[in-house]
Image: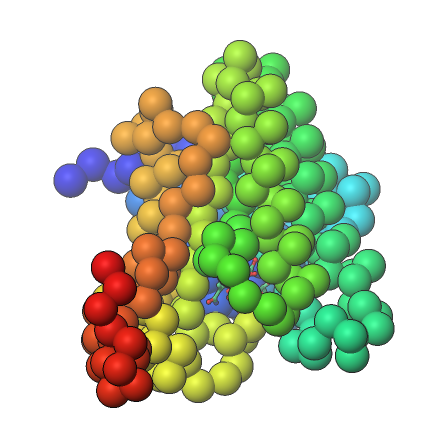
Length: 266
Ligand SMILES: NC(=O)c1ccc[n+]([C@@H]2O[C@H](COP(=O)([O-])OP(=O)(O)OC[C@H]3O[C@@H](n4cnc5c(N)ncnc54)[C@H](O)[C@@H]3O)[C@@H](O)[C@H]2O)c1
């Protein structure tokens, strides 16, 4: 099979670890030249060295618009263009309840998760608009699609990415730039440093553990020409979580309701 990203140049923010790392590895395998952008210099440089001349590392704090512009300039200078921009870097937020939460991480979480995506879209868009277009994929979260309480600031930042991405998709389409989102859920990485077993059991219809590679496959699709007619969508990679709980959980609730004598309602 032909390589899906032959002769393309890509940037992956948050590319040193987790889901971003899987994107970097898959993109290189699929023929792209990739700039890994991250604040984790050690792991980023090591990954770039492992992947050889098709990869380069650039220390970037996505919360800093000058850093992000310098990143895009670096990619263009190093590899001669920019066709795919993955605004993937993200951080979690406090798991405290709203009335207990002093919102101390609000500024940083919004700066990285939301503003970082906005800076990435603008800087990449400025280059792509003058060079035949491109594909931008922003990483939101299943936590932006489902209801629920904490992490409140994180969910809010990720929900804002979706609305921003729709606006950007509409605004940038005339330049041949496609903007889309992926929404991962329950992927074991540095951000999900808790036992995912119960979460999957109670809330994910597909009873399998999703991997960073699963997310990277979806991003590859959106980055490639196979998605030429797709802009402004949010693609969940969440084992069906956004669709609702597993049937077994619904059945359990029903059985409990019947046990309490109230199960006839349709
Ligand atoms: N793992 C999941 O289940 C899940 C679910 C929904 C959304 N996401 C999103 O996926 C993306 C990747 O997260 P992950 O799960 O791979 O976690 P991760 O912690 O393994 O990776 C995040 C990467 O982003 C980098 N990073 C953090 N702040 C940065 C900054 N200011 N500038 C540049 N890089 C920075 C980190 O160093 C790290 O390499 C995030 O946006 C996250 O919110 C993950």
